Image (cartoon, rainbow, N blue to C red; front, top):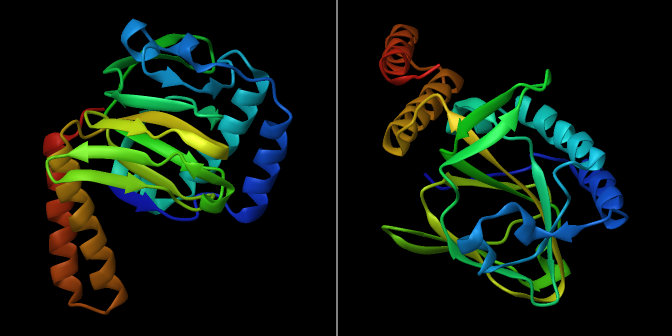
Length: 229
């Protein structure tokens, strides 16, 4: 499921994060990928050990906790701490598929494996700040071009082939991260998301209360059948 989630961050939050990132020390993005990814990746990232990366990532995670649309779409079990990248001067990332299993750590320092089910890109620049840099996501319906306003986010299956086109003017700055969902299969997540949004619409429009309760029960019984926790 490909979904645009608007206004994850408000303009003041975006401006604050950008001030921090504009003054940051960036590293070669190829340091965080394997041999195959390094052949097509040309960008910069905040180092994984950077205290700034951790602090800004916590701000984004706090914003996600307040976003019901994100929760309904991703049904997160675990979230890899957000990372940050910058593309400029022809920077690009050719077609690739994200790694299937990643390593993260708990606040106590315990290492965990995270299965990447959902990929997320949170845009931190306005589209007119840079030329190029479109995120291209390929699926069975063709190629989808994504270039969103600052503060907006796109979520899509991590199994998708995707790329970032070269940035030929300005700089494209974004946060990106992965989610291990309680629901492994994308088709099942889509079904639950559509059911959840329908239930919310029925509630807002004053639909028959008994029917809404019954449909809500169906949603939770499907969650009970499919969820991995």
